[in-house]
Image (cartoon, rainbow, N blue to C red; front, top):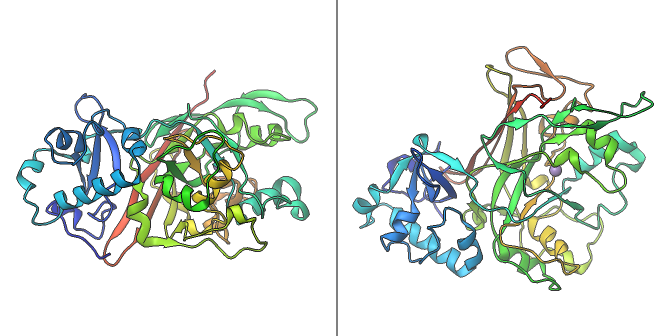
Length: 413
Ligand code: MN
């Protein structure tokens, strides 16, 4: 599919994340209005709740609730029909240009909200480089990769209650830690606060308790993707994680980008998972390319300082796709829900400039990162702002996610 042109001229730019080829779904308000469903086009937002009320979208009672879950639950045929209708409405030469013009709002004037009601949140561990790096630091090189890692997309059940939209400030967590040279644990502000650069997959259609899913069925259930920052308290994690995995170290906040980029918009950029080092059991076999060629970046800024690019990697560094993770998630008969959020796991490439966490970039705090304005960091300090971006490149255009950003506030007394 080539570069499509819109009558919304700002969308016809190689610089925008939101050309007509993208059409991502968000929730916005302007001047204190109730949050409503919108679609990004260039640097504008189309109020699709108003468009539905005017009878233009081909949908009924799906877009007026200020959240995308009703569309997600409606299933793949509705997703495809709605996207085709939107494309027709917004493309150059559309007969609806005049009517729709009054439903456009500059994104600069809007407040963006969580685009979905997150039902449940599961976080995986699907980058081999990340798992090897963290395992080496926590357990030594011989035991770096757990014996199950090449066979199972490992995950843990996280907290939906603390998933927040990009731009939400994050309070430094308190927690219990124990320094290696201390005899007893203590309680207080996290001293090793970190990011995790991840993609979040959003489950559209549900499955029932007792049902299992093929990877192909799982792929059809995925509505779209967001950028995801799985904020992590490394000192709390190191003390609490055995034997049941992360708990409070990752329960205090997870940030996602405000626009859901649909699986349909990403389809032209699909790529297969890497070749298997050990054959997977048949229920996890990939039937179609499940990853995307997405460039992902992390920028860090000290208070009042210019941002420094501290990482650049690609979604293709994952060993398991979201569809494989979803098929595994349901393999016991676990019910999956509309609005479930699946974190990919930290995405790390082969060299330190492509690592997806500061734990890895600084190798456990040993090698500080130098910021553009001269500061240095091993972990995140109060007032620092971390920003993730992601995009795929088409021929003359890009399909992007916007930003996933958050600023750290001091811990509560
Ligand atoms: Mn994570």
